[in-house]
Length: 107
Length: 117
Image (tube, rainbow over all chains, first blue to last red; front, top):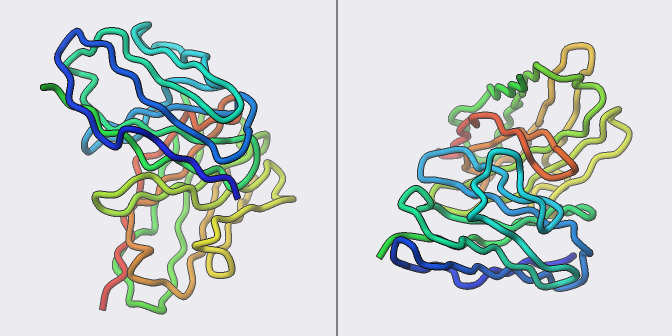
């Protein structure tokens, strides 16, 4: 099975900073990758699918890129409401594995 | 609008069984595959199972294979997860989720399963 890793596992950044989270698949998955945001105590929310397509209603400061095995989620200007854990997920085929998550907070 | 409402969670002893339900509305349930995802307390998301729109194919995480069964009743717009031989490590909030372009666009609020003696 394909394994998903994320780095870093956590980060602390200032409001307005550019934040980048990396997701890596152990084998190529084309662009079958999604990013989710989960705020404390809340249900996960889809941010990006097909590696780089922004879900409707998601702020444009979020962007995704990558293909094959290496992917990134970028927050161009971190806002207080972006405090959350971010997960990547592969969906090219089962098992539809999630990455371990990256916890983002404000410095 | 899409609504997914899970039910059936609770406290069960190790080795016991539980059946979760997910009532779907706001879309044509019989046209979509559906997922179960779980999250243990303080832990990350874990994909559990997927069933195709017509129930013809089912897929499971290795951690639940042989113990959990995903099923659906398209006449009742309901998704199920039968969980047998439950273990402490199955303690989690269980979410049902509907895909959008194959990613998980819609999520229910979740139902908590606690496996404890």
